[in-house]
Length: 531
Image 1: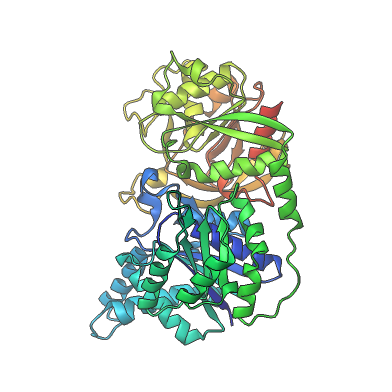
Image 2: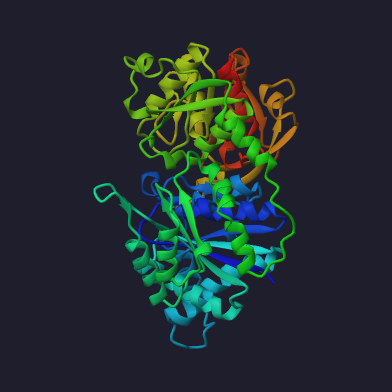
């Protein structure tokens, strides 16, 4: 029987439940347990695929094509194992399932209610991973903050599961905030006490309290929290602000969070945590030999979470090259022919980021042109690759007015066109080309040199593609289509062999980069920028 750990949050949002959940999972995995993590999101959207990145950060795509919360990216980066559709559940998906059952008559005419029908569906989803895979431990992060109206059905489902599974099989880790009042010169526990009180009013007693804090928690504060929150002092865990998210598992190890969990779940410890690779990674992260500046050209640069996986992939690739990568955000909508030289001054490489829509597209194309003409290493992802194709058509192939049909339906040269299977699609949610697809690499190409393989598999999220009617013109003009999907003949990778390092990819390599396996394209790009 699988054991269950629920991670809830209180006092404030954005405390880092996802990082704590991933850190707990990493420590338990390092002790030899089979672990997975899932996220329960309280919003009514079916998935985050239709949400603006400013609203929700990046949309993370799994191998099986699920558009999910960005926390699943943290889960994969920490555990080095893929997640799936079952690892992210939203209120919208819960209600959609229950309503579909009601329409089909599955409830035999009964009145459909939040309790028990919605809570039963939540419990079914939580336990679904245990039925499809043999996991020792399933960690479930509940989005939002305790006290939110949207989270109430999830907390009620948690209360029911604690009784159904038993206290030895299901525990709750509550993440909260201990604020420091500089005027008083002390840490205040009252917000945490109220947060736990709110959780208790829903019938859930937290088993472990993880306290985000800027300052150390002395034994007096731990005893106070223990007294008022019904916990033993060893179950009050300090979570100091960390220099890097990758420090958090080590900090939790020092606080013996994993030992506390093993004890409460009545697990038999298998061995001491094996974290040599993780500690080696941290050592290289904090002691780089080189330092470079990468210009990240995008339209959502004001919110770092909009490109979260790209930022983390650069961390992994930087460590692989013993290099500190400084990411310089560049708003594509503000780039012009007059200021681009200034904006990209002191930049060692240019990455043009993914995105949708017309805003900022000409700035991205200018950035591609600047990198190409000045022999600066260039990396284009998804729309970034498409911008590279458009720029090359206009300035090297003399195809005046060339563009993507997404941006200009009347372009005389649609070098980027709508995919054939997308022409009949009228719904937005979950209808793009999503998930992992194979790609064959051409012999002698930079792509094959980087991957060291003839065939690869990468994750996608797009509707538009390279127009193969222009293939011959591009290859005769000096741009090579070096990666092709063997089933659809879709161009997946383009490169300029004569350039120092110029690669554009239709897929999203950042989704597959992890601490233990940094993505080869990012590693190669950072290496070229160092040179």
